[in-house]
Length: 338
Ligand code: AHR
Image 1: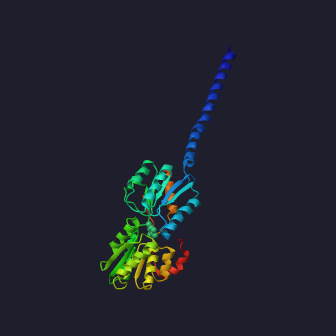
Image 2: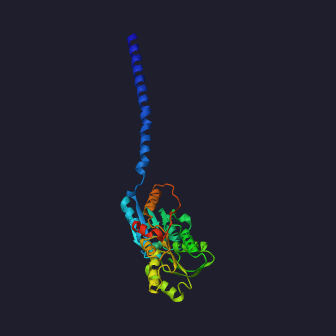
Image 3: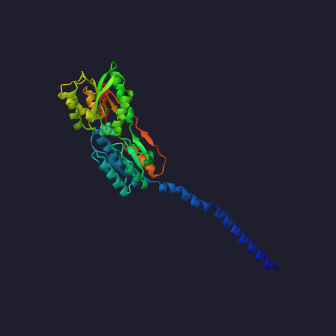
């Protein structure tokens, strides 16, 4: 009896100590497993460039600036190894751009980066993208649509560019005079902003004699300049020309040369800072070239990835730019990327 009692107690003690041992072992390991899984979760869920399908409905191929902008998007897509770049060329027609955006919504791309040819008329298609939960980054030029319809804007400060151009005329023509304006695509953020900035800062003793659009192209600038030269005498009726981009500047030079105007006869200020613009400074035609940087690809892809990962982004990203002058244009020309 005595012996069986003892062995009963020993058995109970053994069972209790075994149970206690199991409890101790379970305490540190059990909660650790889910915590480790949680820690691994974000890294596994984070989207990478390899997951990205980005839509870039380019507005056209009207200028060297635009060619460089397209190259920036295509080359960066390859460098980053994105899944797919859905690229199209709207040939400067807004309806083509709208159709391209709609096709991208249908396809279910991750992000749309839109360089709008003009400012107005985007509300409907931006609403469609928003309803489809596809974020839109407005690239380069601006839109007039409500900012709740798109995620962000990345591009140049076009008003500042116009102001910088005005400052060059104020310096070159302290006693005043008259200038012509060869403007960009009517209704485009670039043309609207540059015209506004130019008027903001131009000295009151300098008048804008006439302003016509050359649609940002070399070919269209030639007849516009020829028509100006039929109406107004260079050096008499006007002393300067503000040209909204380098391509139109090169077209204007062609018309000026044909009319017997020599480099330096007029103050000419252009915008972009392309190789063509630098060459025009080297040749003595442009007195200044206001920079507008087309190499926006890397920034846009980075923002698109941040959007795909639900990160907070800056809503307005303006490019840091400068003004170029003839004094070091020859030296800088070989280093220009566009
Ligand atoms: O929107 C940027 C402008 O568009 C550039 O100044 C011009 O060259 C381009 O066509």
